[in-house]
Image (cartoon, rainbow, N blue to C red; front, side, top):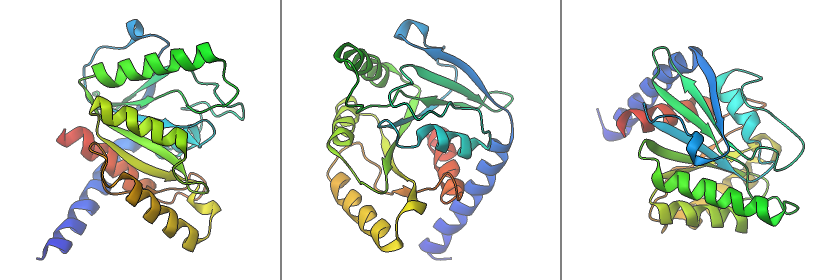
Length: 220
């Protein structure tokens, strides 16, 4: 068996295992508007980050197969807390929905509070194994996204780019965005080199994303 076949087999195994895990119990644990409200670090965690209206809540709902797990809203900047979700019974790992960033109309004190909360969480959470940074396929990496990547690099937190709304663009455009994004993160120290393109509506990339989540919390 060559290396490519072995890698393909490994991915298929991760996808199947992840399908079983995500089909099991997933429950909302708590919201933490401040570090003092964080839950205990009982298990490994994977966080989801993205600018406002990138489709983070929709992706979380699609990923878990539960329409109401994460709140969706047309109002940018609505989520200003860290939301924790328990996965598995017994508990295997946690998903963390981070507050959206880059909302232009957000008051300065809200932006400041967001930066303190997120930065302190990233730097001090030993059980955080990976952050998935969601980027809109229609726009690619914007300045506010680059700021988030800078924060992750500085905190030495491993992260991986996940493109959202991939069904909204042509295949040629998506391929170009993937290539541009890969170039943008190539020299970033904490970035995972592989990019996952997803669609919450069409289900595109969701099996691979579930596998990536499970692999990161299992091997970390």
